[in-house]
Amino acid sequence: MIAMPVKSNKPDSAISPVFGKVKYFAIVDEVGNIQFVENREKSGIRAVQLLIEHGVKTLLMSHIGERPFQLAINSGIEVFYVGKERITILEAVEKWKNGELQNAKEVDISLFSHHH
Image 1 (cartoon, rainbow, N blue to C red):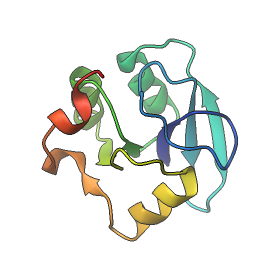
Image 2: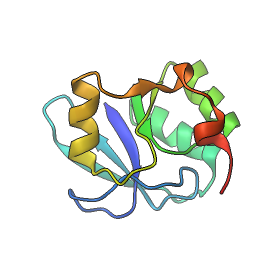
Image 3: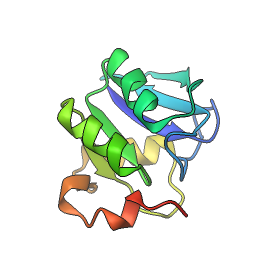
Image 4: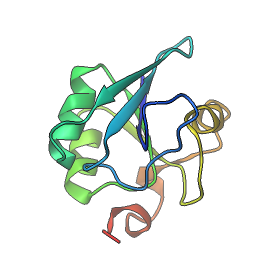
């Protein structure tokens, strides 16, 4: 399962520039079905726990705090950085499938971990 924080619960939604306070997570299964999960807690740590509960193995994001990032990594979730430009759910999944996204462990954490 692949997850990403999104701005709305619509299939053409863009990935949100926030993580812990995001309203929804889009979770995409192996065949491309999209499920939207409401993020009620508004906390980065709780958001990672929510993703774990939903069987997420891959996270695509443009921003995440350092503690939630470490929790995701330590929980076996691979985290990929989509950049700062607007990108939709399906565009991000396609780039991930094609190996075009950088593993977040391989980029400077300051690109995505500092609050704006």
